[in-house]
Image 1 (cartoon, rainbow, N blue to C red):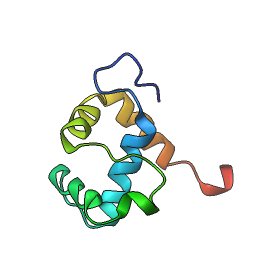
Image 2: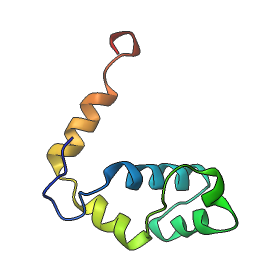
Image 3: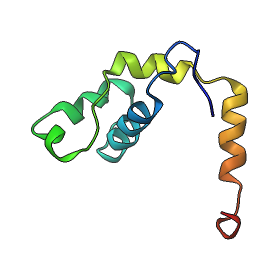
Length: 81
């Protein structure tokens, strides 16, 4: 997916990694992303953490068409990958 040119679409890798790692750490909403900033997390995770407000803008940059692309990608069988 290409989010370039959309508000919040820059640096999608760091933003996606921040969201994924926050969910793994138990975050249930955007404000919980700050859990990654606690302690020495930045020493063990190989990317820069993104502020919760920036993540909200990033998530709003997705359109319905982007979500359909993600949905189609989830339906691909592993044997086809």
